[in-house]
Image (cartoon, protein in one colour):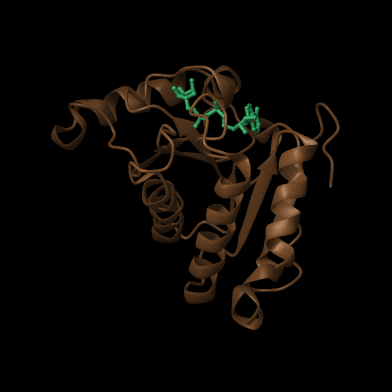
Length: 198
Ligand code: AR6
């Protein structure tokens, strides 16, 4: 499914979580700008400062307005996050002016060749984000390719981890009911499709 510029994605929920034994039926792939998605939460590939940056982080803060940054600043003031959000963890804020109600901010690993626990840390991003979505009983959550831009994680390996973790989560949990992988380019879309076909 492609998103036209300016269009909003309205995922359809043809089935409920409880009558879909196959978790793959609760996963969708779309190509486009994640900030346009009308879902319960979009996930942000943030940095540990939580104070914004480039890539999808910049796009989310631009489109969502200052309410998101204000809540990120409050989170940073809490004792747990004084020195930033650790890699692999996740926090939730309002979606501000976005069509999405919430933004789940997670910090992916910087790719250093794969020997610095990058796969485990990336898997943690998906699990902690999904856990927050479940805690808030969110029906639909959209993920960008965490770490696959500025942080240089190889896209194929990242897609494999993303699909594996989401499938496993959905097989064991009712929430979120629907997960959307958002590919920013056709290459990423193809990689998600290949992984989902396995
Ligand atoms: N919608 C969907 N996907 C997007 C969008 C968008 N609007 N924009 C970019 N992508 P990146 P990272 C894709 O660099 O690698 C920031 O400065 C992009 O093509 O945004 O985790 C943060 O503040 C890529 O596949 O995140 C951190 O400092 C994916 O989103 C750092 O970058 C992630 O690319 C995080 O780096």
